[in-house]
Image 1 (cartoon, helix red, strand yellow):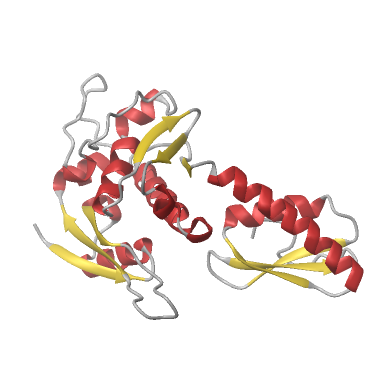
Image 2: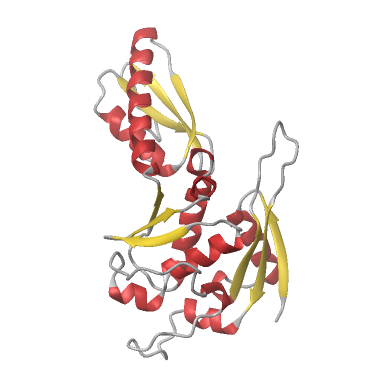
Length: 252
């Protein structure tokens, strides 16, 4: 089977590079995480994310949702979907039809194993996956960047398998704590913008974090907001006087 190694600033970028070299879609390959990206200290020791992409027919058939597998029969799992070493809980948090097409718990467990992280995965209603274990903090990452990347990869693969529901990842209650901190930050900076009469900028946020901030600002009097920048992570500018510009008050 043809195999290539891709590199990038994130796991997703490394996968995209490998797919471009192979000239095939994501559903045609099996992905092995070789190394996660690290920032290093003061720029020293920084490393790119590295993945190995291998064209693999069984994986292609699985991700394309081949209709040849009877629903009542458990499909044979290829290497990337092997059972995690930890006991796997029942799929009470994922729709039965989706679980039959794609085993998110097993897939994410294998992904974390490849990252050399000792993290358990369990399903949580209605469509969540929860992480816990000794290396959970590393799986969350700074400001949740690793957790967001893992969630993105899981959902991309799930979409290929025909899963309609979006899967949400969390660990150690991180999402709730992050939401509370962002809400408090948005209120404080809105007050600062009103008091000083000058725009205030929040550092780049993910789309989910921007939505949290926009919801808070929508309830604040005398301020508006807009996104600044390109790509997934963008800054949010809080504008005094209720001025709303293009891209504001929505999770853009």
